[in-house]
Amino acid sequence: MLLEAAGIKKVFGKLTALDGAALTVGENEFHGLIGPNGSGKSTLMKCIAGAEVPTQGKVSFVNTDITAFTPTERARAGMSLKFQITSVLPTLTLYDNILLALQAQSSLFDLVFSRTRGALHDQVMTMLTLFRLADRAFDAAAALSHGQQQWLEIAMALAGKPKLLLLDEPTGGMSLEERRVTGELLQPIKKHCSLVIVEHDLDFIRDICDRLTVLDQGKVLASGTVSEIQANKSVQEIYLRRA
Amino acid sequence: MPKAMGAVKQAIPAEIGGDVDAAVAGGGTAAKAAAGRKVLPIVEGVVLVAALLAPLVLQDYLTVFATRVIILALFALSFDLVWGYAGIMSFGQALFFGSAGYGVALLARDLDITNIFLVLPAGTLIGLTFALLLGGFLLLGRHPSSVIFVSLGTLTGSYAADRLARGWYYLGGQNGIPSIAPMTLGGYEFSEGPAFYYLVLGILIAVYLLCRFLVRSQFGLALAGLRENEQRIAFFGYKAQHLKAIIFAIGGAIAGLAGSLYAFHEGFVWPNMVGVVVSTQVVLYVLFGGSGTLIGAVIGTVIVEGVSFWLSDNYRDIWPIILGLLLLLVILFRPLGLISFVLGERERVGSFGARVKENVKEKRNAP
Image (cartoon, rainbow over all chains, first blue to last red; front, side):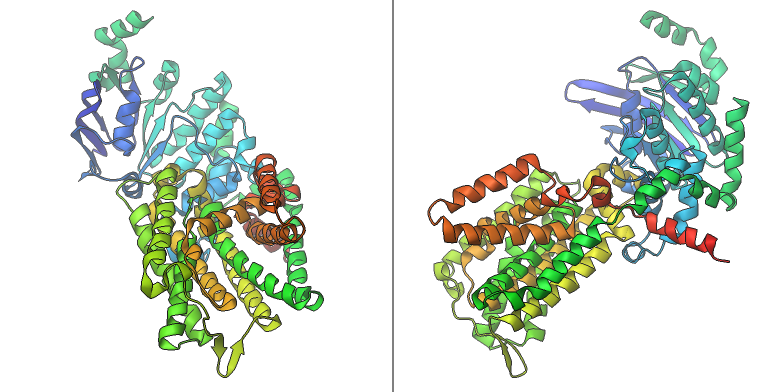
């Protein structure tokens, strides 16, 4: 297994956000994490990415226990996170945003003497082309539409060729057309990368994911293939209850 | 769907090294915007020419004043690097400036060491060491440290050093160390005047070019990331705290170099030099001129010092009030400093890949 999170408990003061949640993701698998508001999806993502430290539980990545790893160490191990709130660097050009992500693991010496700038150029343009942003390469990221900023951020998260990409609500605030395109943009990465995706748009999730995990009140309600989850009675219930 | 899918498929071969040039050529509007960026070299050129000619047109006592301003501009560069480029709020930059000043003053007083090739490296090293110690403590914790923590930490360091210097007899207490012997080069003594001026100007230019090289490199891009969103770049795999400690140490070294020049130029050091007042002064220089541009720091120093000098001559009693109001106005209405009157946001932040783009174009045009 690429990622195994087990028995994850996270307590914020009196609130128990996660209570023994678990998530298992295989290689080249697109895994959707769904559940009602407040079920702990984002918190679980953060515990996996290292933005939060779980109160209890263990996270393994490529057979290594990474529970105590910092975000930097997790990134260097091949994990990448796209934040829920877009956090592209608005004053930098699109090109520099991608270059910034790509050069993250260059040595200090290489950075100071700009030794990887030339070599990374093709990769920068490839990512921008792939995400349909190449014609705006030298505009400031702040000038992009919200949807385009999300794409830029996915491109940045993918730039370092991670083994696992964590996407927290990638289609938030996007138009229907933009959502459709996002789905298409994500398909080709399956060859070399797994995906964990938190998303409210269930149609979107159903279209791109292989497996789903449903969280409810900090616990795993169900986990399985898309059709298994669709047929699951208790899952239907919580979504009906909410509707 | 089929049409869009096609675009993705077309893009995939580029991964193997295909259509990149076509994509670059597509950036037409961007290329134009990048081509229009020419303000900064002009400003730098004008300042350089003015600085080179200054001693020829200024009276002697003004050349002495100008020398002091150039040294302070060097000090301002150190703060600009740390705050303007890396986003580390150092409210104690004088700690490195002043401790180096005291260090070289002691070398001159107690060991008779005044050789320029010994005292300037020694001062630089003192600034570097203090910055490594304080930076290591403030920046290299288990978790990233907040701006408030760092600014209060550096402020406290500077304040404590000031108190220490005032109370320590060996350092001359309140009076500091007076009558420091002049800096020497063989038999030559650097006294106030054009020679000292051109010496510090040469050093300023060298350090400026070094900083310019650094902030425009890929390391500079990492600094920009650090300044804009430290957490984000940590998630890319940057060792953000190490980057901060490194740039903080470089800033400390430059401040140390400036402090040792200052000590020899003024001929004395006193507790204020490590204290909060001078620490705040350098913040004002940089904010006034425009943080995040190297030339802004230099211009800010020249203008703040020049205006204070002129005001104190002409409005003996109320000049600090006028200066204070002026600073307040600039910071309120021009938060990016005076340089923002001529310099756009895009050029200020700069482009780290644009030069690569130009190279690519040249290669393509070549036969």
